[in-house]
Each structure stands twice: as C-alpha cells, then as structure tokens.
Length: 400
Image (cartoon, rainbow, N blue to C red):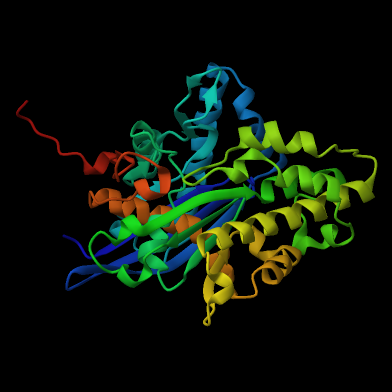
C-alpha cells in the first residue's frame, strides 16, 4: 500500500468565514504494532465569502428543495473555479501526484438523532456536488463524510478526532474554536500507539462560539469581534450568563453535537438584541465570550477529574478563529491554571480542519477507519465518504 499521499482539503464552516483550501502531504510510517503519520501543509488559501454568498449560505435552510439544489450547483461551481485557480496559480507544484480532493461541504441541516414530536430525524446534509467537482477539476473527490456514521446511529460529528489521534497525539486535548467549540482527547494516552487505541479517543461539541460572537458583532458593523476588542468594552450580564449556563445541553453526556438549528432555537432567544444600543450588545459579547470559556473549562474538568491534583501540566492545543480572541484565551487560562494552553501557528490555526479533512480523504482511499464510534455514538467505527472518480481515472474497454 502507498506510503505517501497528496490531498487537497476543503472546509466551509458554520462561522461563514470563507472557503479554506489546503494542499497537504501525508506520510505513513509503519512501526512494529503501530502506524504513525507525518503531515506537511504545502500551500493554503482562504477564499472569503462576499456578502452575497454569506447571505445565501446563512439562509439556505429556508429554501425550497428546488432552490436548495440550485444553490448547491452554484456553490459547487464556485468551488470548482476556486480550486482550478488555486491549481493554475501553483505552477511550481506537480498536481499529477494529487490523490484526491477531500471536501467537507457546507452544512445546511444537522439533526442526526434529535427528537421532533417523538420522531427520530436522523439526518445531516452537507451541500456540495461531488460528481460535478470531480468532473470539472479532473481530480478524484471524496465527500459526504458524515452519512455512513449517521446511518449507523451516530451523530456524524465531530470527524476531526481521528486526525487529532494520528497527527496531534502529543497533546492531551485538541480544542477547535470555530462556529461551534469542540474538543478531542484520548482517555488512555499511554496506549495511544497500540492496536485498538483509537477507541480511547473521545470528542464532542461543547458550546456555540464564533457563530454567536459573529451574530452579535454584525449590528456593530463588524463581521467578527477581532481579538475580543468589542467584548472587552462590555461587561458580564449575570442574568443572561445564568440562562446560558442552564441550557440542558450542558448536562448531557457525550457523545453529543450541535448545529445551527440548536443555536437559533435555544441561544439566540436568550440574547434580547437591541440593535440600537451598542453598550448592551457589547455586554452580550462579553457575556457570551465568558460563557464559551467557562463551558470549555467545565468540560475539561469533567474529563480530567483529578486536574487539581496533577503535578505536571496537561497540554491543550487551540486552533480555529477563536484562537485569535484574546479575551476568550485570557478567560481559558484563568479557568484552567493547570493546563498549558498552546495556540498553533497561523497556518495551523486557520487550516487545521482543512488539513484533517484532507487526511480523512486519504484514509477513505485506503479503506481505513476515519470515523470513531467512541466519538459519535455510532454502533461501530466506520470508513465514511463517497468517492467520485475523475474522468481520466475511468478505464475504457471496447469489449462490453
């Protein structure tokens, strides 16, 4: 089996920052009774969404089936143009070695096991036409990573932990501060390189993060709260904070995941937004920033029950846009004095998810596990993702 792979990871998250593109190289190093991977992020690009695309993606869940399919085709065409440009402008790179494009898609619906009037919904939908992407880029495509896990009774999320296990096992915790804050950890780190160790990896969504902070920043004329500067001008609203902390989701055991629907139904109504009052909005920003840090810290304390007694610091890797929020990181450090909080370099902060989706595509091509039941709650581990072959990959025979 091949040891070296090249993959382009595509990530479009709930915070609507833009499309992350990361060309990555992965090398499989086989050792006795173990397998480890090394990665290199070769080239990256973030294509920011303009106002038109942000509005389209934000409101896509409200569309009719016909209009949603139309938007999916338009968005896939957008991906194709950006990937082809990315390739054409990288003349120093030989893309003939590219094994696949691994696309997360853009999540429109995520209700994998929520109950609605007593009925199991059991579905998730990440927009993006894989066949169209393969045909018009000329590269094999792996996409639709969540469906198999949901079919097996899982949450279909988070998917990043398998990458945390193989690429970032030096850290006790891996925290992503995106639209939703989520965390990954191995409960049995001393056995992380032994067969079956991936079943000791756990992860779950903790709380809303940038999705809410961006929502509150827009009435003030900003796409996001850069460095937490707006929140720093406000103060904590104790009543709102208590209501947020009392949300039932925080009492649920993992595995668990969050989506846009939950945030809109349970969080936004608690933030009684007076768009004409800047001070109230800044108070809400500070409150929600504090709330995110508090819930993250509480989650880590529940996992690390003896945190107050440990003599050596645990290591927490922080990536995602929220890693740049100084106020959020400040509160995290205050809540977790026994944890060494490490923010990745700029490339890793911005492109870790794209990197790991590139890796998920490689595992899918190798027919290896890329989705963990210990993380999602599915009945078993699985190898998720639909594969679409580029036209050049097809074998033509005159004997039919």
